[in-house]
Image (tube, rainbow, N blue to C red; front, side, top):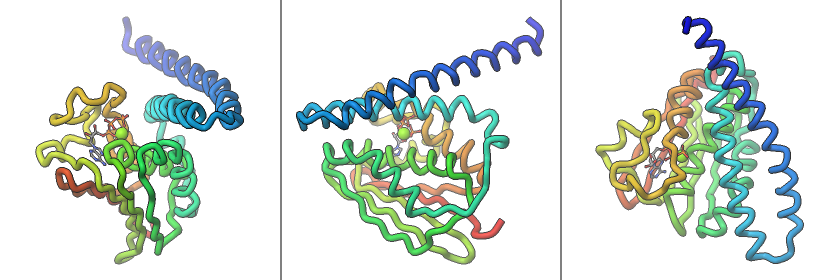
Length: 226
Ligand SMILES: Nc1ncnc2c1ncn2[C@@H]1O[C@H](COP(=O)(O)OP(=O)(O)OP(=O)(O)O)[C@@H](O)[C@H]1O
Ligand SMILES: [Mg+2]
């Protein structure tokens, strides 16, 4: 098959996948409204959790499909970190309650120039990891300005990352060497999309610090003016 035909076919498949995701989102939204009306609390909390899992998987797939056109998909504006983070925390609330996880927020610097869709996606990836890989402990979120740079840190007190894995966590499909067959729902795509795609396109850098069994800190760094 000619190269051009191959590309056209791939584009067609991507488009079909994107419209499929959009179709699935409609019944999923309807289902959320039904779950919200449930009065049986244990059932409600289990359903909300399962709903969230499907929602997060679809969300990652959606961004994965969009990634090839990320440059065309950006709209840079002044954003309020507080409201973005509050929205992301709210979406994870049922899961955090189940796991006994709380949040501490200290946002000294609240504005950042960025794209709301992609920045929210990136924060969502690091936050879902913080929740997924910790238990009964708080997640601390801080922002400040240092030397014309806005820094946003997200720190958990979870299982930590093995030093030999640290350089690989941003690779496409990498999950973990220590916990290799722990969680079949892990795709190892979240941080790849966050750093190699999102952060590059948004001119941000991401740093990570972690200690096994103590916890992990991810830092997003963005120049104040650009
Ligand atoms: N906060 C964290 N604490 C401990 N390990 C982490 C943390 N964040 C990332 N990791 C490790 O890095 C790996 C890659 O993370 P990434 O978000 O890319 O994939 P994932 O969470 O496994 O799957 P998904 O694609 O659903 O996000 C994880 O599988 C995990 O081993
Ligand atoms: Mg993840």
